[in-house]
Length: 96
Image (cartoon, rainbow, N blue to C red; front, side, top):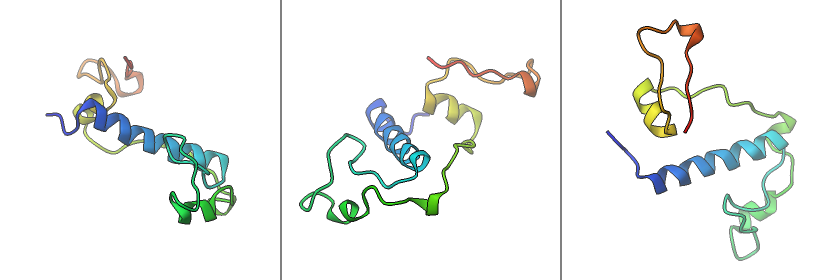
């Protein structure tokens, strides 16, 4: 089952990456995920927040994604995932 085409999945993951990058830096971004700068004509509300502290100075760390293994494998394009023969602590996900 494929919920998104490659183009949609790439866009979704790019927005998530952009969001986590901003959170890790600790300031609101000054441009969108595709490097278009915010201006008074393009996303003026985001321009007002650009480069201001985000999340009261806290930074974030990606802790995981909650879904079934098959969906995660397809979403991230993984070659293999945990099988019945591998102990949980030795599970390995190999990216493309």
